[in-house]
Amino acid sequence: MNLSAVVVIDQNWGMGKNNQLLVHFPADLKRFKNITTGHSIIMGRKTFDSMGRALPNRRNIVITRQSGLSLPSAETTNSLESALSMCNQEEEVFIIGGAEIFKQSLSALNYIYLTKINQSFEADTFFPEISSDEWIEIEREDFEPDEKTPFSYTFLTYKRR
Image (cartoon, rainbow, N blue to C red; front, side, top):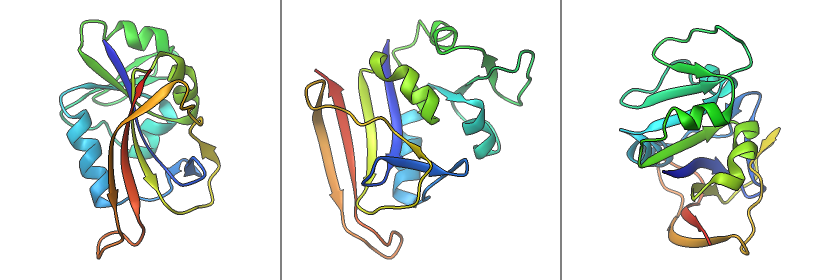
């Protein structure tokens, strides 16, 4: 099984503030949907709560400390290890947040699908910085501001060395 993370960050590796993404923009949402549809996605409970619902056409697995928690259209478990064991027959599984789940999974990741916004925002949660000693950039696509997105951004894919 390949374990991958999908994340959007600003130029300071900021991911969110007050349990929300820093920005929502159509190109990133489309990329996220294209990458994760048809696969299992693993997230923390706060990430699930911030989305407001389970994402369609994906198996939603939520890691929570609340035993017996029932969430609509999602499966719950109490650890990353347990969540991964639920997916052991799958080709690729995606970690989608939040900060604590990314931190716990970083050493096990094979790929990181990163959207980097070339701007800073006020953030209170951050993605762990990755080292070029451990990760190699295998895809890159740069975009300039346009009518739908007022900032430049880059789609990056990293593979563990």
